[in-house]
Length: 283
Ligand code: C2E
Ligand code: MG
Ligand code: MG
Ligand code: MG
Image (cartoon, rainbow, N blue to C red; front, side, top):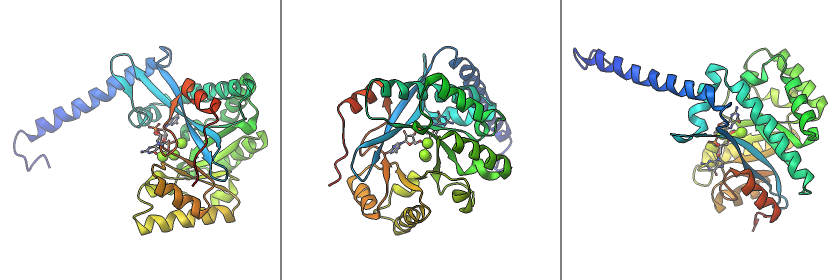
């Protein structure tokens, strides 16, 4: 492409590349310091049970408040954190924070909730990952059944025997597992059963136009039916409208998460929501 643009194109291309890598480098420098500077926060988004409309649990979602740049979106810094390995300490912090917070809410006497924590493939593949989970549970005092680990299908891309072993040990601990962004990755359906996952999270890209796109409606219907047959719970992500909600109820989807009920919010606001016993209106 640079040739078509003539003689100077290379220089433009070159300086463009420089700008991009400078931006990346700058982001990385700041990301390295963000943890010790206390710039991260965990937000919580309710997960609602469609049988009764009550809050079943919540997904912990990391937020980065940079002092000068403001909020940096996870879409921007999580991929960089994964490339640089920084996701290991950041993810560990989120895990411990989410366990502590959920235990705190249980201590205060709110109905026991299950907190879901996103786990990147490189976190999951650490040799001591099971120990890290055990430490987070022990130090917080959270019952293992009140923790769910969200992994993506891509975790299963290599070294299946190591994954099966880790899954087995997590299961024995009593923590739950869900497959996040289901339908966007590369794994084989047979893993679903072999890994004994509890919940299948149907990716929001299928939900977005589920009421207007027949193909997505077919995919979502099939995924819900399949998870039922496998005795795995189905959860729809990114549910924004009443129409989507009614479609999912009609298909027998077990749980939803999305703006139709609530956005992710800081811990204090989430506590407000559960203390008011907020319910989803199913009709
Ligand atoms: P995810 O795990 O699939 O999380 C769901 C994302 O969908 C969140 O974006 C959430 O804010 C957004 N969402 C929820 N409901 C709706 C809705 O109704 N409409 C729309 N348009 N979006 C909705 P968020 O918080 O920006 O996070 C993006 C991704 O970053 C997450 O996707 C996850 O892959 C990653 N991530 C976030 N926190 C962590 C973390 O602590 N560790 C790791 N490893 N990854 C994380
Ligand atoms: Mg997730
Ligand atoms: Mg997801
Ligand atoms: Mg997603």
